[in-house]
Length: 590
Image (cartoon, rainbow, N blue to C red; front, side, top):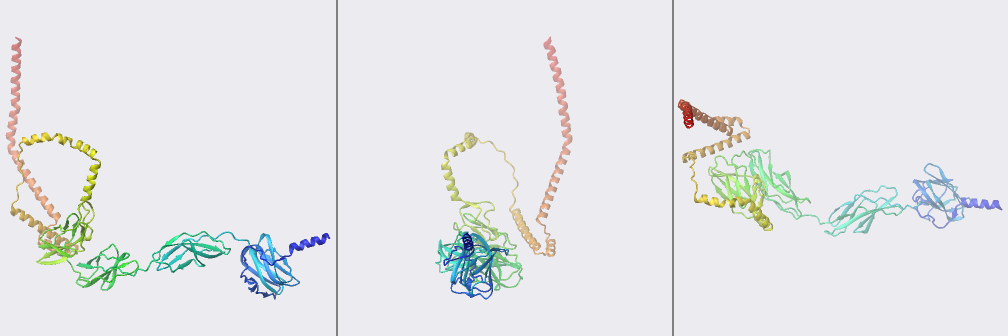
């Protein structure tokens, strides 16, 4: 009796137990893994089967798993079924035996999970419906998706994020405004049917095959917008010719979103692109005497380009008639200055392309007909032989304002903005009055201390005014005659014109022509003229010094005799004085 009980217990521990219910709670890791080419027993369908025609069939898992339970549905015969389970090293970890009758489901649970890589069915019945291996339930979520980013379009957004490389990864879930939206397998998604100009927030989570959801990714906000189809306004182009170059400038364009930059076209060919803050450019390395046609366009960030501007036809040439260094000084009035042009008899002043004044042979013009806060562009053209020549370029800009300009701060030379570098007088007065009123006590005290010497000296000053001291007349330099003044003015003008021509010939490399001309007109550079002036002054000083020395030599004998007499007279006088004092002393003693 005891032997039968022992055998029964041993068989109960070894033989699997029939069970019509799935005892596993983890993932079926055998799903889709074929048994020696047969997939009917691992397709998840309890009605399909394959017939066993060999003594054994084997299924190999992609990787080793911790198995908690196993379930088999088959048509059992009298011989039952053996199952061989091995780990990744090929070591057998269990060898259970299942016995039942007819089509039935049997299962086996392991109190302590076993590691399984391969499963082999041995001596089985002809029909196997389904074999399932359940791993230990996975409760660890996958890593959260990273680097979520996106771009907004017309009624849509496009999302991208880092790819999950975990072995049990299953899918991603997209959330819009905190609400579940879609599940995707890829690491990107496009969300459509959105409302333009409405902001949406997005984040992503990841799922594994056990259904564990990760933490959410970073959150981003996107706003779909309608495409920008409006090009910028058309700029207005101007230009002047130079030596192997042209100088172009144009008006600023506007755009519903913003101007991105400008493109310059030369003879219908794009030659230069500039940013939105640049409104002028020089096109160099051109051929003198050849006609060129220029146009400019504006474009925005969406790639919309304006229509081309007006065409400007220019022929580069060597120009000596354009005023240089044109500058505009900001202030209550705007002062325009320039360098003179040789042989020019006058100049014409243009403001924003319109003639506002014609002046004589001067270098300065003050424009008082200006409006505070308005920016103006000035150009100067020389009049030579009664004919107006090329205007300076680009315009020298300045802004009219009621301000005090600091030195060097408000020049708009050669196209620069002359509106900076000063302080507004009205604001300065208001600030000063407020300061004085706020600290009036301390201001009065400090002023009293500072000006107390002046206040005390007022009575003395009044007395001096009542009885003013006689002042010696100081000799001044002799006044120049009108003829001398005119001669010096002509000489300065001539030297200025010659200096400009000498510099120009040097700049364009015509040194031989320059030297021949300088020799012909006896030209002296400013340095040579200064040296010649210093030489003449030195000779004059030496001549005066020689004249004064000769006068002193002629007067020296008289001065020597006079000094000898002066020295001898005190000696005789002193002797007589001593004798007189001794005689008086002797008389007093008697």
